[in-house]
Image 1 (tube, helix red, strand yellow):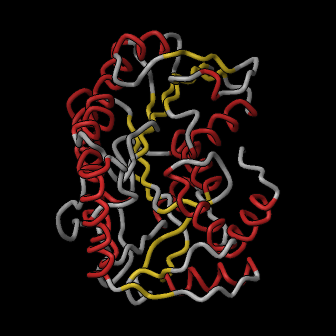
Image 2 (image 1 turned 135 degrees about the vertical axis):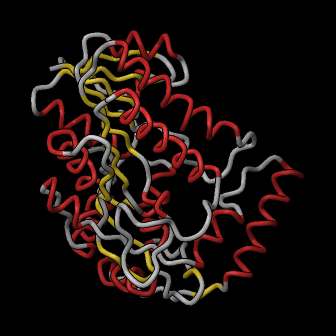
Image 3 (image 1 turned 180 degrees about the vertical axis):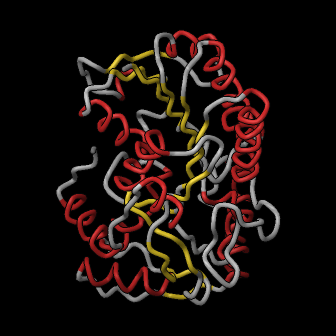
Length: 329
C-alpha cells in the first residue's frame, strides 16, 4: 500500500514515517528538502511545498491513504497570513486532490488547542470551547477542522482528526519539540522560570505515543470524528518536580507572574520592530498560561486502543536519550 505524507521530516511525522516503513508500506513524502529524509527502498521523496497543488497531486498519485501533518506552528510570523496559507488553504488543496484521486482515508493532524481551556473537568472532544481562540495558529487550525468536517458532510469524504497537546520526547530539534529543548536547558542550569504560580495545568504526551495514535486513528477512527491523543495532566509545579527528579538537578526556579511575562512578550515584539530579531514568544501565546488545559483521552483509548506512557517514565527515557545526543527516531 502506498501512503502520502506531509510533515515526514517533522517531529511527529518522522516517527510516523518510520513506523509505516517498518510495517512495509511505501511512503510518498512531500518535502522541501529531500536531504532531510533518509534513503529507504520504500520511501519515495517528492520535492515541493504543501501550498502547491501541482506538487501535491504528483506526490499523491497511486496512494490510497493520507497523513497530513505539516503545519506552520511557530509562535510568531512577520506575515500572519502564513498561518492561513499553510494551515488552512493547503488543507483544502490536499482534500480536493485526495477526492479527485479517489483516496479512501485521511488523518488530519490538528491540535488540542482548538478545544480551548478546561473548566471543572478535563476537556473532551465534543465539549463547547471556553473562550475565544487565542492566536492565529489556533484560529487557522480551527478553520481547517471545520473545513474537514464540511467535506465529510457535503462530499462524504473519510476524514479523521487527531488533536495532540504538549508533546515531549527525543526527535528532530524544532519548535514543536520545545519541551525537550526545555529539558536540555534545565539540565544545563539555563532554564529558571515557572509560569505564574505554577498551578496551571497542561497535558503532556510522548511523541512516540502520539505517532502510534495516528496509526490507530487511520485503522479504527470513525469518519468525521476527532480524537484527543493526550497524556498525563500536570501542573507546572508537578512538571518541574519530575524534571528535577529525573535529571538529578535541583536548580532554583523562579515563579514569574503573568503580567511580568506579558511585559516581556511585548518587549520582544518591540525588539523585533527595532532590530528584526524574531520574538521567542508573543503576548497572544503568553495569555494561554492563565488557563488550564487538562484533557480526557478516554474516547481515543476506548475506540482506538490508544495508550500513553506515564510522564515520569517518558521524560526519564527522553533524558537518557538526549544525554547521548541521539535525536532522531
